Length: 297
Image (cartoon, rainbow, N blue to C red):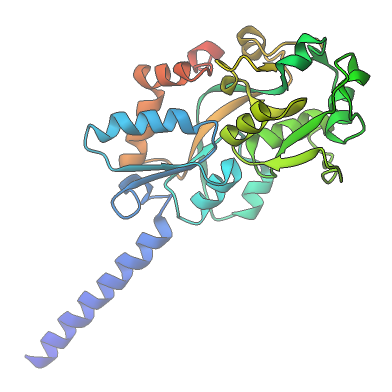
């Protein structure tokens, strides 16, 4: 009898260990649909964040347990997904070969939920004085601190103050790709008293609103309702809905919800909701183009 009891204890102990081990390994993958610790965790891009927050609010009323956090931006969300800290990564940049090389064990599955554009945003006094269009070379000169007064670009006699995004942000990656191409690495930040690094979209917008003569990359949807800020055209192309939809604007970008493996359970329910008609209305509400508007569905 003692031997039978010992055998049962051993089997039970093995089962518990197996469950714990596979549970930890599968977060973000097969376990992603069940939610980490019983709660679905969504993290990453501050651009995707407003849509995810609204979707979570709706789904909580239907009984789902969801947390949404935008710490670390797109790269942070992807890293957290790979480490099993979130079930869904929000990203305003596509998964790259670099991401796959960094996390070779992760099966990245991306669902495109809509489209956005990164704007070069200036203060209204700069735009009203004549800076409404910039060339690629002029934007590079601004962000490399080779142009330090707007007067050099036909604007007011006002110092330029640059608020750039920190590395790993989808916005920063899109800007670097526009300025330097997909293969050339961006130079290090210039040593300038008129240059600072910021994080998410809300922080970037706040800094632009509070600093005369400032400029920075920012999702164009975050400018609506803020008359002190204005996006400029790039090489003669304004970030309008038509130009974003047709791919004419050079910093158009897709927005994603990403899982490790095909989403199941709560993760699939969340993504399916954002892709549904109701969820796509949330995408539209926050100033982004829906999948239908860009010909994805």
